Image 1: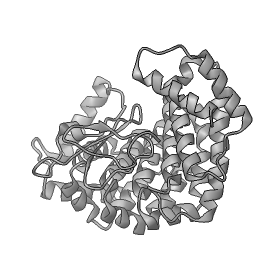
Image 2: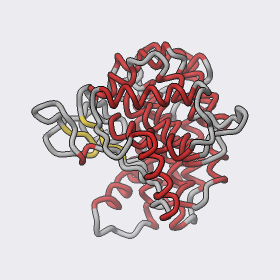
Image 3: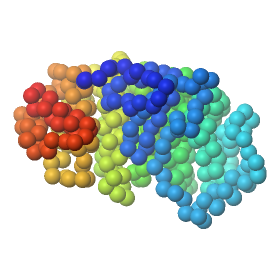
Length: 361
């Protein structure tokens, strides 16, 4: 790894490189379209600004759909609404009522309006504390993210929003992670991921699960005990349900990043021996994906291969006795290096360097 182990924050957003440890208390920005993560220092008053928001790759709503949301917002909140204090309590109260089955499950417009506003509040740590302070909030969000019919499943957009809100609130916040862990979020999210049939929603559930487990010893231990790594690895076939190759690739990248973080001893201290054994199999899986990527062209861009290469490099350092470079992988890297055109930009140069490192391993 040719960059610092611990991420060094400044007043501007900077990319978080694979495997870097992120100190608590930073503003985190996640581009849900590419999976790229960035971070910066908190502002002077500790409040986020618009640039600190997560970017969600949701298509623009059709005019009729947007009108329905606006009407739902009016019905729930009235003509004017604000976003702090009592409003937060009111919003989470509505979500708890819906999650508990006490509100008509067909009122999708009202629910989407509430979730949309909660998503905006989730980026503010103080508002996240208020939301998570409601003893029914975590359970309600988990229920709304569940694709299982009870008696009918919530629409995919509701499920996506529920997991985005939960993940945003708890990320890099050990206290809120603990609340989610004690509320049963880990087994619930694993069950939800296994049952999900929407590729985009599955990516959102992965985000929530990653936020819940990252750096939290109790959540990580439970995740390992429940066979979480195997469950996440088995999500790969779900990408076949994606509506585009780009969407399938995004899910694949999220799976790789999730497992990489979970196997990184610096981010996940105290992992059991079963995880160490899993690392060997995951390294072999990454090698097979790289070898099988040859000739895939634009559907498997060099930036994706670079993510695999960096993840493999990190795991080789962390697990030198179990994560080894096979002759076939070394040969693949050598031939890819010969085929690679000398780049004009830094990203392709990084790819060439990663290939060179692997071919000489």
